[in-house]
Image (cartoon, rainbow, N blue to C red; front, side, top):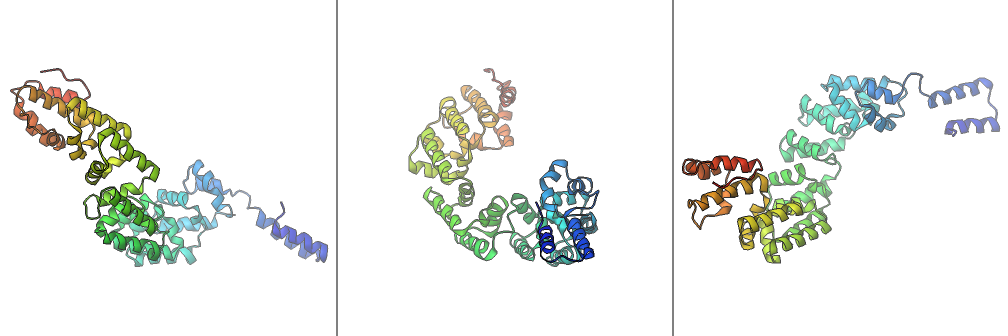
Amino acid sequence: MLTLKQRLLSAIRAAAPLPAASLHRLSLSTTAAATPPAGFVAEDYLVSSCGLTPAQARKVSKYVSRLRSPVKPDAVRAFLAGIGLAESDVAAAVASYPQLLNAKVEETLTPRIAQLREIGLSPPQISRLITVAPEVLFSPVKISRLAFYLSFLGSYDRVHSALNRSGYLFRPDLETVVRPNIAFLRQCGLTDDDIGKHFLMRSRMLLTQPQRVKEIATRAEELGVPHNSVTFKHAMYILYSLNAGSLNAKLSFLKKVIGCSEAELSNVLCKLPAVLTRSESKIGRVVEFLKVEVGLEPSYVLQRPAILGYSIERRLRPRHCVLRILKAKGFLSKEFDFYNAVCTTEEGFVEKFLLPYNKSVPGLIEAYAAACRGQVATEL
């Protein structure tokens, strides 16, 4: 397919022939622009000079297809090395944003680095930033947004964590998206630390359109998790990750497997919104274990939903093994609370239920260790 300049050359020849020398110079210009100098292949350069893998180079080479020689990318690499980036950092940056190799050092990179220093970033922090968000070097607007997040989150480390979570961090507008979301979440009673931790470092909710954030808050209230509850921020974070279909299916399953009403389920969600993140198979197995093997009533579980979050193999069955033995030996009263024994730390469980009975119930510690390994403990 003819290039624009080649078509123009043909049209000029047909309309008004130029002197042979002029035509020759124009023809040479066209050929030089269309054909890179022999010996330079962008994909090979990405591997040999930038440290990308062949697979990475194939994927991103189209973004540097206009490079005709190593002069400009060599200058970029030298500049980055000069401000402290290691070769591995440069490779990560180029793999993430290959257009970096097209940058003009004096016109683009030098002023952007100066701006990053002006907002308080140290050389090591600038190096870390470039490895995860090299596109910031092409946008003063994104640097201004970075300055906002540095102030809001309180440290570069927290900003870096947010960037690792989402490269989308610098895209949403501060005035129409981020600041309105912060204002609304503050009205819901959340602190800036909560907002940063749960809605920026752990999810992208702060970067979502404000109407969507308000809808999630309304849904949390409808499920029984009010703004003033300590679990509201957790419920918001969880609901953000669930679509309507998945959420409704999970709610229906919970009501069926636990055997509870809407009101009782609201109580469960208010105390343990994380139950919505558990797989149906895991919840079903835990409920079955608590009802059949331990003998707990559904009402007992509904009042103590945190018990649903524990692993059968790593906690529930080994501790139930010990408690069953102690109860059979007459060391535990009928009023004994299974939930308290399950929720206590490993150190606390050992001190309260193993060490005091080590001599009076020989083999108790061994039975517990065997149960923790998944083995069936023998009756003592």
